[in-house]
Image (cartoon, rainbow, N blue to C red; front, side, top):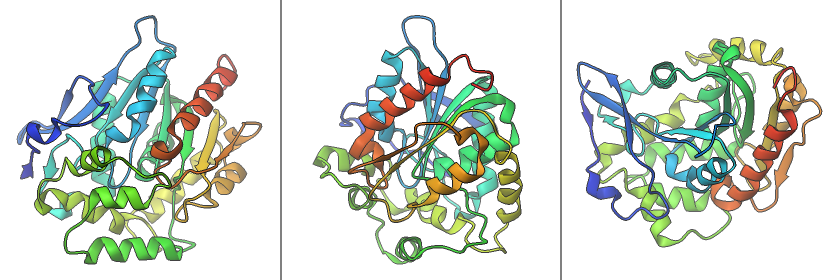
Length: 307
């Protein structure tokens, strides 16, 4: 598998992101690597939090939340999906499939021997993370779903997503940092926008960025539609704690929280949140509030029979 590796000097001016680098070799033959943050508290860990980002961001999105969680005693794992961040980036767009992304993440989770995982997922982090939960629910202690969904293609796509999909395939130069800015409510500092651009020094580095919007199952003929339906059958009997924390200013995932709350038993009697001033990338707009809600959720459910 041919891939590009973003030069290290592209990441020299990343603000508030000083975490030690870790690399998991996905493909021994080619040497393709997945980068991930693995930060542990000084004292005994209260548990593992797996933070999964989406499109077109990377683990930088969770930088403040990572620090908050570790201070409160949690070990945090935050990978960069293949094609994003400090992870390697296959050149061939056909390498980027839903199934491959799941396999790559599972390879990391398996190698790190993660158990009793508390998942936080947003955007594609949910499309992937919730599938992982459905495939091995015993490995997960809880889920925090933020501005995400698990589509089966049965309802089609809303107009906001259709516009996003069209934009992603037709824009000559994919403006990653500008996409992050347009999908947040607050004005991002220039160095933050630069940090989102940093993994992609050329258009050739953006094969995964371009491909992700096409992988979302918005029709019944998508190759992962049936697998997502099967995943929902597992989630519909998933009784472990499940919290939704959505922004109030995200046209793409608006209303998806109600579907989770209706269909997932673990959502019952949880303190679900709609955060004012939270755009699609609510980690940038209201990250402190998101992590505060997650930490309160963990404390509330610690020691319960399903937690």
